Length: 148
Image (cartoon, rainbow, N blue to C red):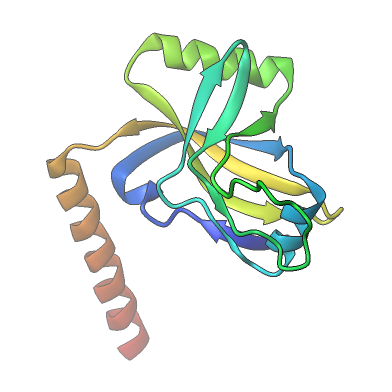
C-alpha cells in the first residue's frame, strides 16, 4: 500500500467513527499522474447524488504526456462502494450530524487506486483543545519512559 495523498487535518477537525475503503473511477492519464505523486485531497469532500458517492474538489495534476486538451484537474470523481456500505453511509448521513470525509488516497497491493474515507462528526473548539493536550501528554510520557 503506497499512500499518494493524505488529509492530515481529518483527525484534528473530526471524530471518525467508521472507516470505509472505496474504489475511485479515474482516467488513464490520471492514474499515471497519481503514480508520480501529483494528487491532493486537502479540502476535498464527498457528496451524494442520485444514489452515488462523488469525490469533489480533489486535485490531480494533468499528466505531462497526456493528450487531453480540455482536462479539468478538480473534476468530480465517482466512488465505488458496495450497496451494503452505501446503505450504511446514507443511513448515518440521514441520522444527522455526520458527514463523510476523505482520509487518504493510495494504491492497493493489486495496483488499484483506493480512497479511505470515514464517517465522522465535527469537533467543537473544546474537543480540539482536548486532543492537543492529549497529544502533548503522550509525547511527554514517551520522553519520560525513554529517559528512565
